[in-house]
Image (cartoon, rainbow, N blue to C red; front, top):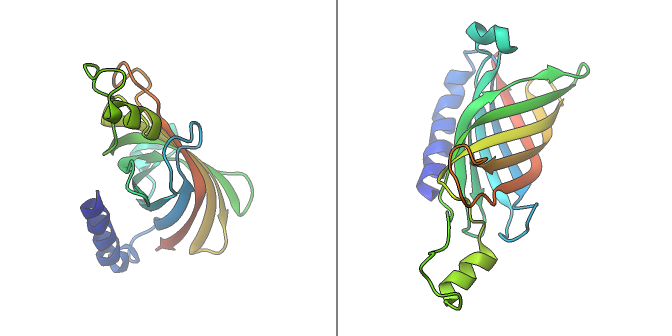
Length: 189
């Protein structure tokens, strides 16, 4: 996952000047508390993301914007990255509600070995220190309250959830819930 973070950071750095010629791109950097619902996994996550312009052919579903997102755990536990669609619903001149939905891939633990004896130290360690997510491909949903500090800068409080919802898989589905703050820089527009 570290190589994925370096690749995304490089792409963002190289793309930033090009994005300035387009409209409504946003680069984001944030931090989240990790595994809020169950508190099995530790450490904060650092998040990186990019959001593109509205997709006009999808105006019949309120013109969503495409996003790419990476969340890196600072103590080496579950990292994930994903892509999807984000909407922006204004609540005032400077505040908006931003729900998003997509697909994510994680590098964490899917399940413990069902053949391991109950007293196996590795089985006990995984069951007590890792979220057992069931599948590597999961749904990614986010809800954010975004505040425009200026035309180019934003700050948002956000919550994100990854799980397979018994749709993309079956069995284990302990999920991960993160919440935090992110800062955005807009280009163009």
